[in-house]
Image 1 (cartoon, rainbow, N blue to C red):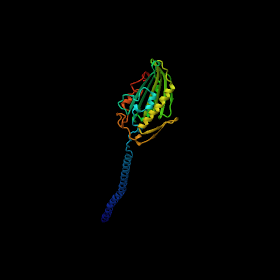
Image 2 (image 1 turned 180 degrees about the vertical axis):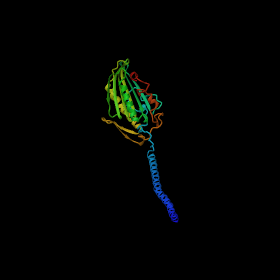
Image 3 (image 1 turned 30 degrees about the horizontal axis):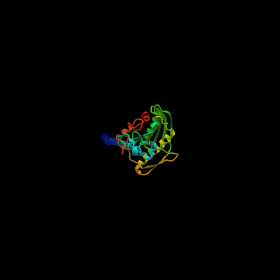
Image 4 (image 1 turned 90 degrees about the vertical axis):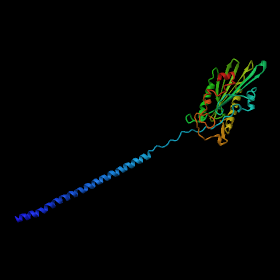
Length: 320
């Protein structure tokens, strides 16, 4: 019995040691699991930090840029000369000898956008009849506009329209158009015959563009009450010479000088910085004087022709 008790006493201490060993092994096994979990958790945090940093970088690079306001090149010419003063006394005495030097100015609510003048001459030769001459000059200036375009392009479109109008006059016969050189940037002469109850009229129309200004010169003549009909070629030469003079007056009013060679296109040389303003157009609803950006309302309402509405000859009534 004693030996059995001793054996039991010796066995009992080993039993607790076995349990403690089992618990120690279990504890040792749990440590790597905890470390593995901690490692996974740390990886998730790093991944989240990278992801967040990537999103922030993307948001920073994707910020929208501010677009520039639309602009157009400012029109070259800012002024118009007085239409009644664009021809010299010598020219007027040749074109309309009985008209004197003072013409009849057309109506305009903005003379820096649209202006015109006309002269009428009747050389009465008594029983031999009389020679009639009528001359009209109109100037139309276009400003640059962000919605409509540059002034010279707008002027070019109106230039083409004026040529078309001159070629489509009702009742015109033997119409002929020819381009001209040495008269602004573009020029075309249109001539035709027009029969009226007063007599046979010879009509000459010269349309020219210089920068953002369009010049329309109408010149016609007739032999009345038995007087002979004027020569069409002579009228054409006189009209073309006068148109060159008007173009030069427009350039001079804006500080430019225009060479007029016998052949080839005219050349403009800037005489002062003010002749080529660099300021952009502003108020689209204002008139075309000063720093306005849009053609004046008078230019819009000018219709198909820039000629004066008053002092027209019988031929001019049909033309306009």
